[in-house]
Length: 229
Length: 303
Image (tube, each protein chain N blue to C red):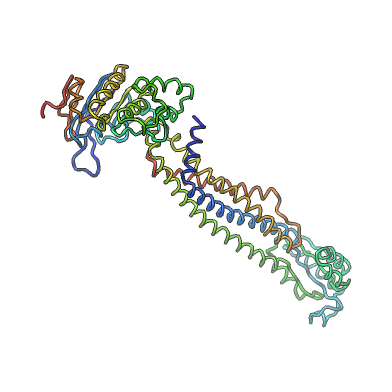
């Protein structure tokens, strides 16, 4: 589903490459944790998957497409197959829960009938039934992140990228978020989650890829956060 | 494609930057009004030129008994032979398209018809015989005036050679100056309008960066993301154009009507020309705003 072949990415202002000859394979419906200290290249990895950045060397394949050969005007279609969740939720404060989720479908031109049908389903899937009319300001951090996940998942993407989704949320609430991500993963969606949250990684027992200074230092099935620490 | 969504986003953008939108509309309206006025004057001048080029005749006045010039005083009124010689010479000049002889009576009649309606006092004061018999010479090209003039001036029986074009050219020169002044100011204003639009769209893109960021992330097409901003520019340009059209119509019915009255000839610009000028101005306004918005978005809205 995601295939990195000897990928190097160097930002012009930095001496050390953000990713240095990284090769990673993520299969369909896998759940992968991406761990490592800040600046280890986790975010760069996610940005390369979205084709927000181009690699200096190596090849990136996502959902069967060679991103180097994907013309710019087709990038939106790639992104429709990828859902994204961030640490800071990125909700629209002037729209309620339903509207925030519906927004993702409206802007790719889905018909209103379809939106009315699928949005409530997804809102329920993330555990927010009965809160569709609330504004983001009226929700807790955990609930806001559920809205963000619903928005990322409402178009049924093949891949869900999560960049520290529990970074702003207390540990108890984080468990709920992880359950939602796990549920999404069980529908066959590949989930890649970058995180610093050792407790969560340890409890989930999923594949762990550890990056350090742009290199893959560990790739372990059913791994834990950091045996080296 | 969800038209309602795009339109509501456009409306939000216009409302959120209301003061900037008003500034854009005002600048566009003023610049287009000046531009349109320049075009109108241009059309008016070219129509007048056309009118006059067809009618401009070199008039060769013949000596009569009361001619004040020394040549006429010495030789007396033009004779039959003088006229025959002159006609022969006119026939031989290739610059001459045709010519017509008007007797003193015909010349007076013609004068009455041309001046009578607008200046009765002058028409009444003139008497038959005040205007000498003359030749109306139609030139193949009005620019050849000097050649023909040199050929016939000083011939026996010729009093003077006159050409209305001289006077007209001065006036056309004035109108041309007016036109260029309007177009130059319009150009400067249009440049200012373009900068203002660029700024407005930049502000608009900035205030909606959260929305556009999410749109980009969930895979909205570039066109869909940019369309509300482009429409915002286009609508501001269009409203500016509508206001400018009002100014252009006002110019047509005040300034140009005035000019036509001075000239006492029926060379009024038709509705067709007016619509043409308005059409060109509106298209220019909308295009300018849309293209500037597009160029601004390329810089400030990463897609």
